[in-house]
Length: 221
Image 1 (cartoon, rainbow, N blue to C red):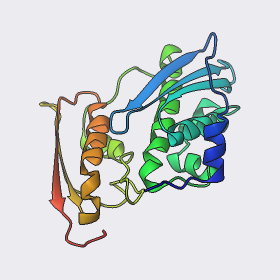
Image 2 (image 1 turned 180 degrees about the horizontal axis):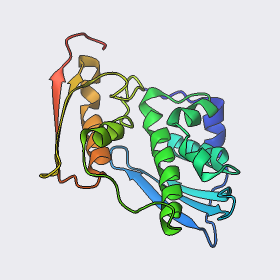
Image 3 (image 1 turned 90 degrees about the horizontal axis):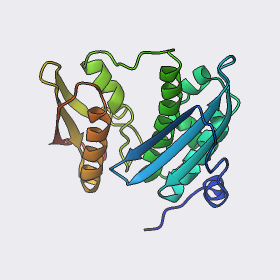
C-alpha cells in the first residue's frame, strides 16, 4: 500500500533545507531509532551570550519522512533561543509539514529528540545543566512513553490510554510495562515494543525492560 505525503513533505524530501556539515559546530549529536532504522545528526552553532541558534545543519539516513522532518526541524530551530527550542512539540513539526501519515509520525519524534539532544549537549558543555538525570521513577518512564507513537493511530500510547500497568524498581533498574493491544494494532506490535524499549532503556539506571501486551476489549480502541 502506497503512503500519501503532503506537498510540503515531498518538497522537503526532494529539496531539504540546511543539509550538510557545520564547521566549528558548538554541538553535534546523532539520534537513531532501531524500530525504523532511521538516523539523524544535528550540528548547531549557538551564540553563548544570546543563546540563539545562529546556524544549524543536519544529515539524515532514512526514509522520506525522516529527511523532511529533520529539514523542517532546522527551520523551526534556526533563529530561536535554546529555551524556545526546548518548548517545541513533535506536532509542531508535523503541522508545519501539513501532516504526516500515522505510520510515519515517529519520524517527527526522532527529529525533535535529536534537536533537543543537541541543545542539551550544548548546555552540558557550557556548564548550564548537570550531565545527570534524576533517580529512576515512574514519572520519568511515563514521560519517555509519551514519545512512543502507535503507527496505526498516530497517537502516543500514553495519550491513547493504552498503558494499563507500570511498575518501576529503581534499585534493580527494572521496568515492567503492560499495555493494551487491539486487533488492528497486532501487526505493529514488534515496532511498538522496540520503540518502548528504545525510549525506556535511554533512561539512567534502567537495566531491564519488560513489555507485556494485553488484549483490547474494544476493537478499534
